[in-house]
Each structure stands twice: as structure tokens, then as C-alpha cells.
Image 1: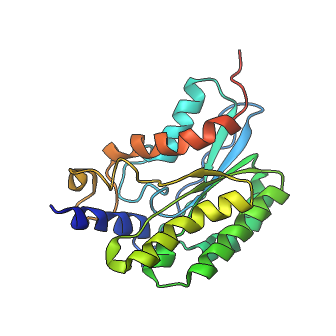
Image 2: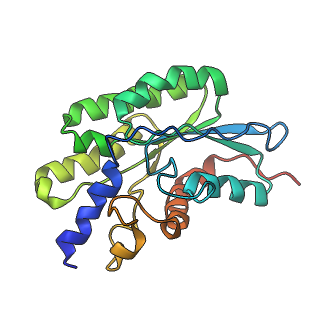
Length: 223
């Protein structure tokens, strides 16, 4: 498979199945007594679309936190097909209900798929970040990319907007959520048969990408 075709998976995996709206179950809040809450606000890359429950990166994150005795409970509020506008609309109720200490924002791929203006995506991500911070949460923004067939200038601007929001809002950044998945020579082997969603085998890599930005924000492990 050629390099350009491999990079097409960056969009399809990041853009998600826009017509499918499947809410992921929220994690139980009582996994660790007295634990802080980490809220994942995402789309199908985070909602375990096409995977067995517990195989997605958010569930793997909870397993890692528990194993390392880090007192954080993950609440996965991701919905397949969601956009930054959808996440922005849903966030106030989620903040009120869960009062998270950390919010991971994994949205934007569907905006590109639907042809939304870059300034709209950036404004929504900024508003989401600000709302989370005003509620007392630290924020991690997961960056996404689109393939070159969207145009080199558009692809560059789209990839850059996540870093711009993180920089201006003083949030942590995962530069590219699918690094080591969509950009490797055997990328096909790491996607489901629909050619859109990563397999379970790819999610440990996705977790490691998020972890690099998230780890400095976490509380110390319990003795």
C-alpha cells in the first residue's frame, strides 16, 4: 500500500462513522474510593466502536491507573460520530454530574469529514477547554490529522489547530492520537474490516500516546 493510501487512514480513523451515534457506557465512579475523576470527551476512537468492552484505550487507561495505584476513575463519555459542536453541547451537564479533575478532549475528526470550517472547530475546542478549566479541570487535547487529498494547506492548518488551542489555553497536548497506528507501513493490519476504526491491537499504542501528555497531570500513586 502506498504512502498516500496509508495516510488516508488518518482521516478515516479519525473522522469516524459519522452516521452512527452509539453512546459508550460510562465507567462506574466507585472503582477507587476517594479517587479523582478523569472525563474522556470523545468520538468512536474512544467509545470502543467495534471492540469488545474493555478493549479500548480509555478502558486500558483505567486498568493502568488501578494497577499503578493512581487514585483516578475514568468516566468515558465518548459518542461515536460526535463533533466538537456535539461535545461542546454535552459538556456542561457532564461537568456538573462528574466534576472531573481532568478532561481528555478527543474530538475534531468528524468536523473534517463533514467539511466544517476550521475556525468553527477551533472555536469549539477552545470553548470546551475553557469550560473544563473554569470547572477546575486540567485538560488534555488529543490532536488529529487529515490525509493530503484534502489539500496540503488544509491538512497543515487542521493539524496545527489542536496545538494552537493547547498553547493559547495552556492545556496539555497529544500531538497526534494515531501516531504509530495510521502512519506505519502495516497500517491496514491495525484497522477493523471497515477500514475506519482501529483494532483492539492498536489501542495500547493510542493509550501510550495519550499517557505521555496525561501522566504529568495525574496525582501521585497511593502507597
